[in-house]
Length: 235
Image 1 (cartoon, one colour):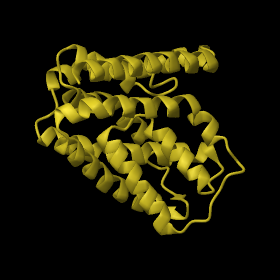
Image 2 (cartoon, rainbow, N blue to C red):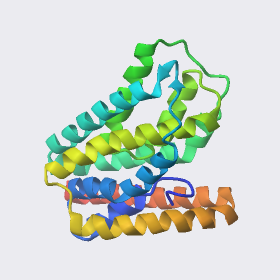
Image 3 (tube, rainbow, N blue to C red):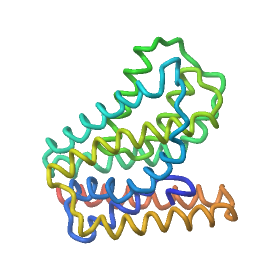
């Protein structure tokens, strides 16, 4: 799912919750499990440093790292019961982005004037979101950059991958140090994610993009509804 359209956390998160982990532990462990695939992609794009919105990608990476740390710290400070109530809304936000994100990043007519501080501030917020939950954060980044006037989508894939990985690296380091990651669950899932990345990429070449996208949306909506029901029952 990650390789074809993104949103793999919609599968890993409920799977980890089903094994008995709390939503908080599952969120952290899911981020770690999906990390190797993203890190490998970042390695491929390691030479893609350039500028986004007039700001060097290296500077944006630093801001993303700070945001990832802040998001992970916020996650650690969130009581489990509160996170159970917040999680369905985060899933709903990610579902909307997954469904309509491709349309957002294709918008050419919308752009706003901005300075470097605006770009850095927006990237900090995106980094915080990535560290706290991160669902569809890559789509969010590209959509935000498009609004800021970046029109060459293809050239944004490299910076997006590098910056998402930078935020995730900082976040999972902090979460692992805090002892919230359940390695016995995320290590086999991480191996599966890497295998799935390869298989998904191969299947994605043959599968209709529309079918893949609709399938991912159906899965995302179903899981979001299930977590709203879970939150209602637990509340």
